[in-house]
Amino acid sequence: MPKMTPSEAMAEVLVEEGVKHVSGILGSAYMDLLDLFPAAGIDFISVRHEQTAGHMEDAFCRMTGKAGVVIGQNGPGITNYVTAVATANMAHTPMIIISPSAGSASVGWDGFQECDTWNLFKPITKASLRVPHPNRAGDILRTAFRAAYAMRGPVLVDVPRDYFYGELNEEILKPSQYRVAPGGIGNPEMFKHAVEVLKAAKNPVIVAGRGVVDADCVETVKALAEHIGAPVACSYLHNDAFPADHPLWCGPIGYMGSHAAMRLMEKADVILAIGSRLSYFGTLPQDGINYFPKTAKIVQIDINPMHIAKTHPITVGLCADAKDASEELYKQLRDAMPKKDITAVANKVKEELAIWQKEIDEIANEPVMEGRMHPRKALEVVGKFVYDNDAIATTDIGNTSSTANSYLRFRNPKRDIATLTFGNTGFAYQAALGAQLACPDKPVVSIAGDGAWGMSLFEVPTACQFNLPVIATVYNNGAWCAEKKNQVDFYNNRFVGADIWSKSYAKIAESMGADGYTVNTQADLANALETAHKNRRPAVIEIMTDGTRLAPPFRRDALALPTRFLPKYEKLDKKYFPK
Image (cartoon, rainbow, N blue to C red):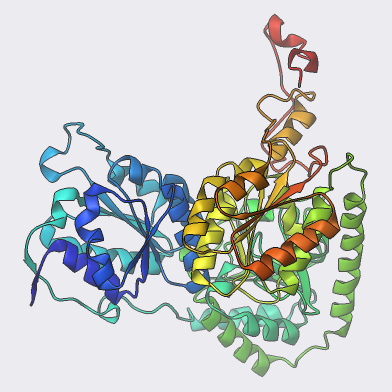
């Protein structure tokens, strides 16, 4: 076995895993490894804040299927990754966090930049590993990749900063020697049961989730839907899991989702969930529609057995890869039943979609303040641009970003990247940089309100430095509008901490080297999008929207009208908190 240093062993593991770049911010703790990157053929993507690196690599993995790798200075550099790693963990995105820590001889002395990141990251990773000796550096990094791919999520590798140095004899292994490729079709007997349930269904509905995208099995889901005559709903914030131009597409479920999908699901007697954990929040009643029927039989396919029946009791659970399972299910259904005529079902879907479109059009036509756009009118234009150009769209959390769930439609998978159920602000633009890194020739559009944009705008120079022509659409409504809606509904319009001010986000972008546009009409927005697309430069489009046009409460289950007992608070009125 050849002699090498721990840093060289780790670099070679990255090379064998096909890692072409690592993201983070320069730090002395891992400089010995960093120094090897150019010779190893690994680029270092230097960001302005470590959280960005985490969101970038999350999106990079969602687009490519390859685990993203991040690194940072021990202590504060690594703790800056917490939000991004927690997001990736709940999004089931493989990621490797190379985490230098205090020198092994000084642990526990509260030295400079010391922090027990190994324990800190345990609850938000699939595994938190520690290099126990310099000789194990390569082995532990291999284990991290194995765990990240097998358990679908981030894995932290804690490396005492002195363990990058030394001498060891190491055999560099190919990935096929230490981890298996994903796949598998699950228990054959369960497939027979699933076929019988679907064969007997009168009103089946398919829910297509993230697993359909990751496993690249949209075509098989199409064939399944057409064979059993089932409308297809996309799971919450996975609008690219089924093509919007298919006659059985009925839109996404969940907050600000498709009423058409919800009304069709409400009447279903069988639900086939493919590659979806049927998350709690993503299946809550919306707009008065308790659409997840209690009496429906559920056939659920998920690669992780812990996700099956986690939130809803099932009839059949298939622990399997979404593609392998759907192909096997389709094969058995073809043998068990003739293909249904989908004409009547497709007509019903079309009818329900038309009703829903009329509903959202009526809201979008509400009057607005002079010089401002209705946020839905802006999203109409952005949604059309994304669809027409087969663009990748990234969304944040908040009033406008969440409303985008009604407007983002895709013909192809791996186009919709959302913060998902961790729900952190600042995600969209940072993830968009990673998506652009993964797909340099595709248009990428980020959608964020001005609150979320304030947590992202400092990365515009990163986009300029690395020539990432992301188009950022920033909805300037002057407030944290999702929370403002809660203060309207529950706190008598007492707006504490809700208002946001900026002179011009477009001019800030220009000063950082990007192209800036300010628009307040649909025509100007469409022109700005086309111009930015043509120029292929980092761009920020500031859309002046009406902050009084608020979406329904995001968390109907989380708030109640307040009770006051102390005399000084009993008669709270908005006059106590003037705007």
